[in-house]
Length: 207
Image 1 (cartoon, rainbow, N blue to C red):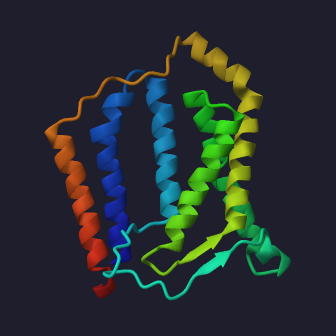
Image 2: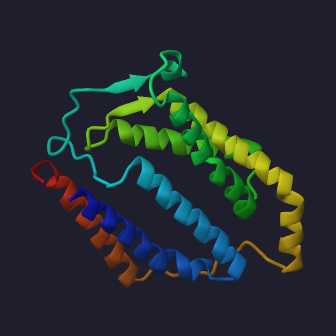
Image 3: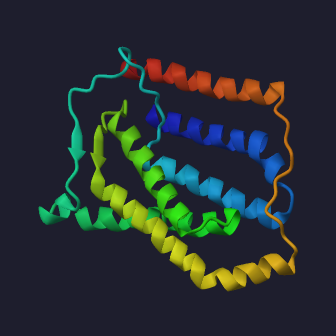
């Protein structure tokens, strides 16, 4: 059943892309490619950290009797836990693409990348902590390693910044989106996606 929900999550993200983002980003091919790449990247970050998605609903599907909250940096590594080094490396790698793509697309500077990387990691850790799927864990090491990954990605971007600017200038590419009005069809689709997410969250304990 969980695999079915994951498929539904992917289909929902695809539907949101074509309904909400594709019309906005389809100004030129490179603009569309870069922003689509960032969107796909975020989908896979969500897939590896949070899918299948469930909304925590108080008194219905939440029962927080156990919390795994680690506030000591690199505690697992110090205790020589299995896969601790591997998880550290994967957490660093996870946000490297973010540190590369965001300054390319949105021209964000170093401190913005550090802030955004930290916030993304914090949101993921918080959602895992309150997870309906009994993950209920939050690790400060993940915050540090994710943020470090964003920083590494930014420095990789700096290495190739000169060539990126040449490419943008050569094709006279501007980072703008098409104006895309909100219509009733988009609202209905988004509400239906939200509704199925609420329903599955309510029935989660009975599946």
